[in-house]
Image 1 (cartoon, rainbow, N blue to C red):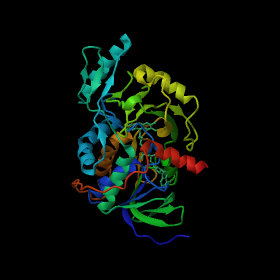
Image 2 (image 1 turned 90 degrees about the vertical axis):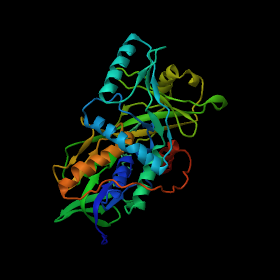
Image 3 (image 1 turned 180 degrees about the vertical axis):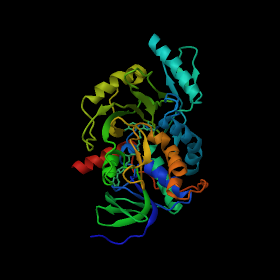
Image 4 (image 1 turned 180 degrees about the horizontal axis):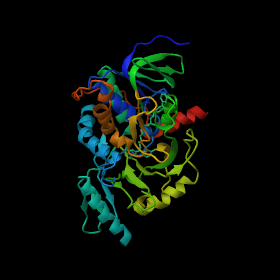
Length: 385
Ligand SMILES: Cc1cc2nc3c(=O)[nH]c(=O)nc-3n(C[C@H](O)[C@H](O)[C@H](O)COP(=O)(O)OP(=O)(O)OC[C@H]3O[C@@H](n4cnc5c(N)ncnc54)[C@H](O)[C@@H]3O)c2cc1C
């Protein structure tokens, strides 16, 4: 059964960091928007289960869309985080070389950083690469604050709102929800993370496929209230970016992630073998972890495109649906750049007027219920019990 619902200009499908940044950007640029999130709360997917690192783009390949949007976000994000009071540890990162090959990689990374306009330095004593601009945030607080600010500016958010159908009408699209409600909009943005391919299928678009790439993490409390004052990144090899060690805003230290390609989009568990895989690498980088027992673990599922990355375009099957899909590894960092790109480059082609970004006013947030790094794991554990 369907009930009649008010129409909006833009519907955003998915309330992770990408959907929330889109909602924020549209709301503050004068576009009437509504976001639909299948889960009872926002940010329970990849956006709540990552490393929380806001990357500078020092190691990103120059000229790629992903890199451009990381750099675009860097111009927008600091003011937004400040205005919304989203906490950030401006820790900086270091990559310490252990082999001659590592030294070569570091020289290569320094040149890459320069090509992207990112400041780095090489420490004389040990040849470590220092990236002062790398920081760590609370990804859940970031996601929720963006959506909260968007709502304060007039946008709408519907949770428990699984989009199950999309049909065309003369002036745009009609979205069907699992609960029978329908919403008429001028256009929709597909920010459904792991399920973005299923949203595409709703308009007959099977141009891409998303699979889960699992990343597992272990959380530690250091003895004697010690803290970690920087992000420790491994020197990457040709095969892997490796395991990082980073501080959290609540004084913990996290090591991870793994990268395990899966088929099952609902497999949020941490594999028993993950602890050894991660700890053997993490201890090399940060020996203080030797002998410590983790206090918690969590896993995230990266929405990985099969043979594709950063699919940001109008669907060839229905140009009123804009895909923002396969945002696999850097979505927390790039989200505001992605949203700005969609607003500035894609919406005007659909005849949707977009104003310049208006200044943000502070929003008051409800205190979080426990650490962000346990939120999604708890949610899925409750689902399975
Ligand atoms: C292990 C790991 C480490 C990472 N580390 C970092 C990092 O340090 N820095 C960084 O920048 N990025 C990092 N990332 C990447 C980042 O987390 C992702 O790029 C980002 O979260 C993707 O956001 P999203 O909004 O596209 O997807 P999601 O967060 O998955 O959100 C998609 C949302 O869509 C909803 N949805 C799906 N289908 C429907 C439907 N039919 N109707 C309504 N709603 C629907 C889902 O419930 C979900 O909430 C990491 C990711 C992982 C997993």
